[in-house]
Image 1: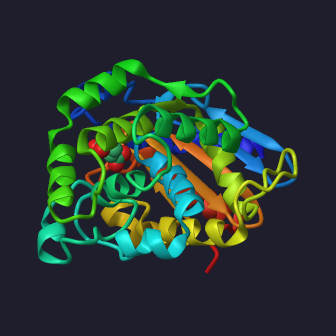
Image 2: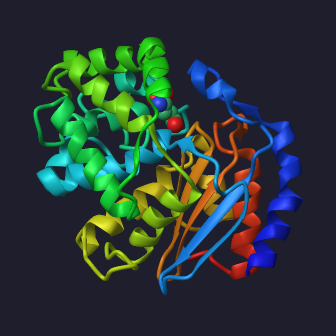
Length: 305
Ligand code: GLU
């Protein structure tokens, strides 16, 4: 397995050259464009890795998977999906247009920015620091890594430049989707995106989902089966931005990417996979990471279809 992963990383590193590191959050622009790494955690507890798997990156939109779990745990699925839809979009992750033209009372899904900001507004707590503490605590638990924290520089960079997200959030406040203080909700959202980890951390989240909500390394159940099932389904249909259909065909397992270059994948009943490659393709997915996952899926016959 180790040799397979090393070969796949080296063969696919060439695709990082065609991508671009995200720079609309200035701090992300400092990432090393050529990096590519992978970590696999199997449900039997084996761990395999190759390439730049030790590099740290902010999980960005991958955090939307974690906050969706918490929002459902706090509110139940009926309430969450009354506020946020579950339909894919062919528009960019930060698009505004659907909010006004489709349904101003319900952003399309929890994996795009509007839907994720609405989702985080539902998480219990004081709406700001204590709500974020709950997200961080849950993240530490689901990764099995008590040292997980935020990258303060990315958080400040994102908070200063997050005007598009502010626009989405204020629009949703005006239509009643968001009921609490908008700046508080945004602060929690910017912090969740700035959570920093490695391929191993996101692979472990994938392994918990692949294991239907049970931590494979301890046997402890942290989410019910129905929550794991909903989250995996929404990852598969909406997790890879407006390339989710493409990813479903080529990779065939639930995945969620972030503009920091990470991709979390869950191969049901088999393994969690964490990939990192900060050079992004035009849709915002890691360009080397997508190819790497596509080949890995073929090699190990991971597609659920
Ligand atoms: N923090 C990013 C934003 O809201 C997350 C985007 C992403 O990773 O897709 O713009």
